[in-house]
Length: 181
Image (tube, rainbow, N blue to C red; front, side, top):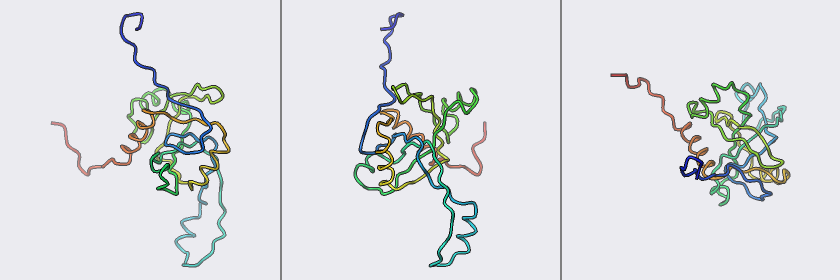
């Protein structure tokens, strides 16, 4: 009970750190390498013929990623590619925008709480559903294994993240929305 005599809400942990050999939705992968297509990709692909070989330069960047693929699909071996989204420090946005993101008023962005686990601390993060990557599951498993102990978003927060991701992708823009009465 609080000092005012009202029952306190249960304290749900946001994160857990562990040295897991599996992947789950909500796993955070800091500094993960991703491939960035070259700027002339459209030109090269549109002029290509079957059997052509390309001399494309591959750009490798590092990104903070979170696993978005469903845990059940990852565990059951139903997928070969892992869906990931980029995330970045909430402090990259002004306070008023952070407040709007926290209130879920920006469908493409989702905020998760800061992490205070020893040796894994980070500030609140904003996940950007517009910045999506897929990487081979074998690679993501190998990369996550090299991280050693890593952070995993816990229930119910990972389900909340999944629901926000689904809401973003299931939006329908109407040609003529309902008008006020």
